Image (cartoon, rainbow, N blue to C red; front, top):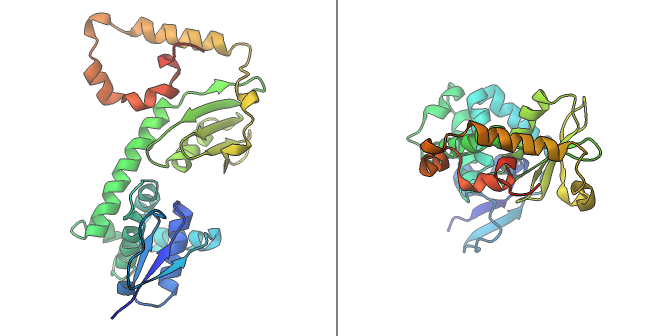
Length: 259
């Protein structure tokens, strides 16, 4: 009986890509390996399990190969798909990479939607893209006493690494932090330098409670502006929820009763 080797990866982009590297490098045969990230999943009979330790250098090599051989669209699709919570995404990413590398023109792999793995990756890519795109407009920064701009988010998908470059480009001369409360991560951007991901456990709760002297004033002005531009007679809560779902509002200034 053929034994399947399951590579158990960390539930992150670099964790999955390290798994892709290890599975390919194992030379066991693509049909005899599988990638998984769900640690809560039950073990299966006739499977050999290997724990994959995340290695940034190996993940970067895989990313470089994807970008060079499969193209920018496949590169983006893999990054966005890895941000979604789906138990099958790690193996689907591996199968898509394998398929693309065996094609004469690897950049056409994103069009192979008849392949279930490619189809799943592209669906997850769309889901994560929509989540990230919404947060690019829904993130609300507050100025802390020390001058740092601080924002909280609770995304369904792990889009923090996808959001950070957007704000790093626009707020280059600001100290800012975006805190993913759901995953305990934060993107930290010191003024004029590169942003980094860090453990949110390092945040000082007492510091986060101290806003700058003018923060309350600006928050009240923003709420007054949102109220002033609203037309009461044209209120349509159902339509509004389609554009701005309720799950985003806890972290948005204009929907908070108190500052």
